[in-house]
Image 1 (cartoon, rainbow, N blue to C red):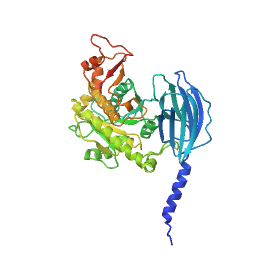
Image 2 (tube, rainbow, N blue to C red; image 1 turned 30 degrees about the vertical axis):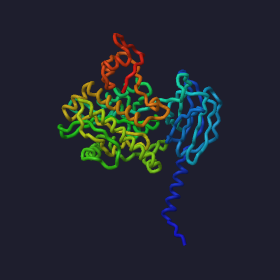
Image 3 (cartoon, rainbow, N blue to C red; image 1 turned 135 degrees about the vertical axis):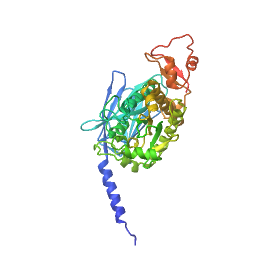
Image 4 (cartoon, helix red, strand yellow; image 1 turned 90 degrees about the horizontal axis):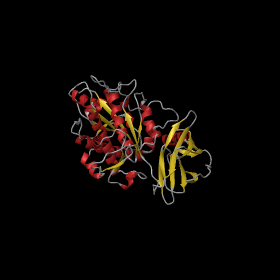
Length: 425
């Protein structure tokens, strides 16, 4: 006689009910043409979804997979060039949307916007004669730690929230003007951003990776140096453990337990169990990213390392299940040397440079399909901005002035805004 495990049956029932309640209904909303010439395609969801999007060629199409979702109704749309057809189907608990195209397009990775009564899933595309394959930018979410009413660590003449924002802006500037990258700022100014909103916004914005920038403080002024962290339930060192425990009152970035989420938000903790393989891949990729940034920090002659290897700690802001995420401690503003370095533009620029080069080297090892890095280019293209000088550009990219001049045949020539130069990194 077969014995039925009552607890197992109850667990199956509970999961089934939970899944049924959690089903995310998907419907088509509209297509509109923007002043930029882009076509904007909008779908409606009940809540923020776990999304995988990619483009295929020959025939040209864009595919969006929405996990734990179902179709509210059949999708019907009129063709509007370069869109031939929008179709959708259900594959298990996944809704697959396919946008059939007449040719190659530049497309923006889908992002999600919470409304009062729904979530809008938005995709923009533009026919571009310059591209022979469907192409999109790499999206980097930059999280400047603390802000607004949360100052973070407090130094003699410096606040952590100010240092992190200045480093984040420097990193944003480099990424923004480098072809193929698109930075998104989690905190664009001195405002308070709830911790849950930081990683939730990275998902809504469709980030390919997430970098949180910090500058720590410690009771001993002798403690100094930079370090890079990846999420783990167990701390990798006494320092990491101390950060995870002592900063709970002053730094919500360290509190791991997710608070009360809006019913339309995405529950990262629940998804970690449901998508364990994706989560393990994310941790592995986060370690690779952290190592790449560490390699660059070690080359910076002005930045000393607090920890020479990747550190692990229970930093809640890093808990996305599928977005590679790292936290960079740029130094200790409680240390006079670190504080002086981070008060100056040169010191902050070197931290931003290390993060940028680490990100770029990460995508050399883990190239994203449908982006400029998928072909492993030997150089990046940088667009000259008003006020740029070659010496500062060289510092930001970790190359020499002579190299930039030789690569771009600039002997006895001036640079000008809008000019595209090549930088081999």
